[in-house]
Image (cartoon, rainbow, N blue to C red; front, side, top):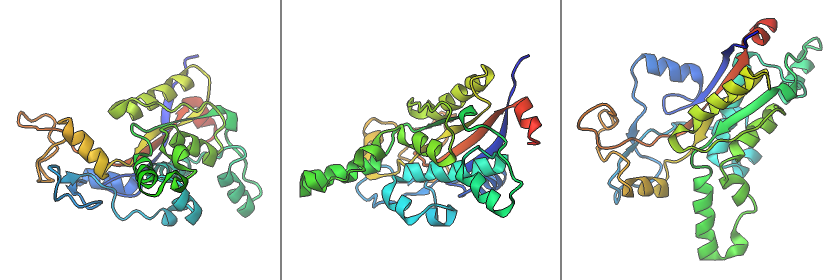
Amino acid sequence: MERRVVITGLGAVTPLGNDAPTSWAAVKEGTCGIGLITHFDTETYKVKVAAEVKGFDPLEHGLTKQELRRNDPAINYALVASDEAVADAGLLIEGSARLAALVEEDENVQANVAAERVGTYVGSGIGGFSTMIENTLKCHTDGPRKVSPLMIPNMIANMPCGAVSIRQHATGPTLPVVTACATSAHEIGEAFHAIKLGQIDAALAGGTEYSVIEDAIAGFTSCMALSKNPDPATACRPFDAERDGFVSGEGSVVLVLEELEHARARGA
């Protein structure tokens, strides 16, 4: 029988809101998430606008102070989005911390999916760029001994995917794709095919990015990719004949994809 794939959960940290309902409500209202860049001083930059995540405090979204210190922001965006997606789907992964917490409240709660049948497909086009820049500067100004031992684990683009897999106890396939701006689309496609082929029953799929930083904006500006329009309301217009580039953004969106009959069987 043909296996159909459906979306059963959604989590989001976006320039429109720090969760999926807030972000979606803003979309329906026609709210623009683009604004003047506040992450750094743009006086010497030709690009003045970006779509920044606003008012995001990881500690208010279930992360610890240790995770806040240890992780690149791109990883933390993905962790928060994945938490929301799993909760939204009602997915109780065997052996997960989420399941254990629910069992403490009600001993009758049981897992509704085996850990090895859940894959993780969360990509990042640029990885922990801010971590790399910060430690590169430390290396050249203060010497190599000042470089963090977490520099490499934070900067490589597969780490958000691995971190989500560990946090959610999804022990199925973990496949971080890096294909620039198409990364998240490819991740969702790979997750779809894995479920369709019967390799897994559910997947966490999406992407994360923290790229509104000096070096990334400077690099994209130098290759003539970003819009230099300083008006947030009109800078992003990809189908306009007068367009002059794209607007950089940040955040994370994670979907729970699931085989239809598996979702129905657990009452999703």
